[in-house]
Amino acid sequence: MAALLLRKVGGILTTQLDYVTEAALPAPAPASLVDLLDRLLGAGIVLSGDVTISLAEVDLITIRLRALIASADRVSLR
Amino acid sequence: MSLRYLYALAREFGDPPMDQLPDTPGIAGAPVRLISHRGIVAAVSDVPESDFAEEPLRAHLEDVRWLAEVARTHDTVVRALDARTVTAPMRLATIFRDDAAVTERLASWHDAARDALDGLTGRHEWGVKAYLQVPEVDVPQAEPPTGVGAGHAYLQRRRTERSRTELARRQAMQQVNDLYASLAAHAVSARTNPPQDPRLSRHAGIMLLNASFLIDTDRNDEFRAAVARASRPGGNISVELTGPWPPYSFAKLEAS
Image 1 (cartoon, helix red, strand yellow):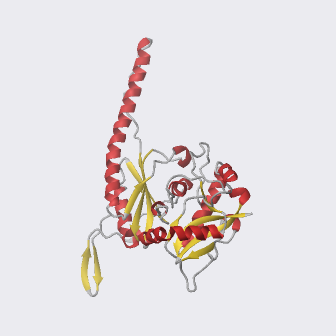
Image 2: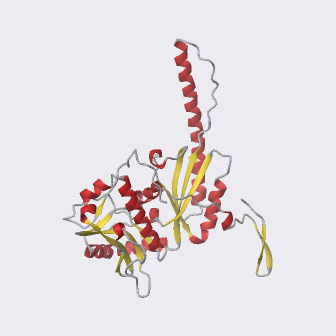
Image 3: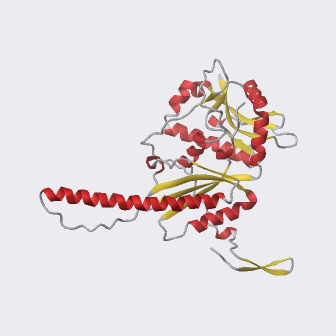
């Protein structure tokens, strides 16, 4: 991926080793549902500890999920 | 009755401050409102209690299609907000009783949220997964002797296959550890998740790395170039990049 390019910067020729242009960078892969669920279920803002509270007492419910369905179809985001 | 689904916290934006996300509906098409408190907004929408109270919610979360729809909507809302202001995404299904409850939490979370948002400003998340492509195992298939020896020969072949795969996996893990360390050098922060269940992700090969990196925007290209260099063709490790993501994996609050 290294490329030796001559660039004219401010009227002065300069070289830049290992300059990889945006166009040359491989496009990221599309995100899958599982990639999203990794983040939505395992990360994001987390209260300390797992808290499941009855609605009558306190306002906040945080649900912690166990393993997902073994027979899930692959459902992509697009 | 409606509950409030919280998608994210964000730095207040707009002049005058925006109180609703334009053009981006939330779950079940409800508008996404921005409840503001001391410069921080909570992005919420009204959701039916019949679906999002604790018991029906638990039942719904077992249904992958329902879960997928909510997850997609949650992500769409977070991305729309992230396009406008620094955003700290919430986990799925963080529910409040009403607007007053949200405001009360904003008040108690204020300092932690402000610090979290400061730490996310000008930064985004990239995902990197690495897989070991299990090579075709070339084990000499001699004609098995018949009778008592045949079972032994079979077991011997299986042991050899397993130990070659195990050796390949151990060598690959070392490469993957090195890869993770080298990518983390370009990052503000890095973390890993457990490898994904292949029954869900349907990936080929053995997933050895499922990592997220928080990258300064002006180091995006540098990071992507480092990932590209790691994906050398012909190697036995394949590397997959996803992103940019809103910073799901790095939005940490110390709960008060």
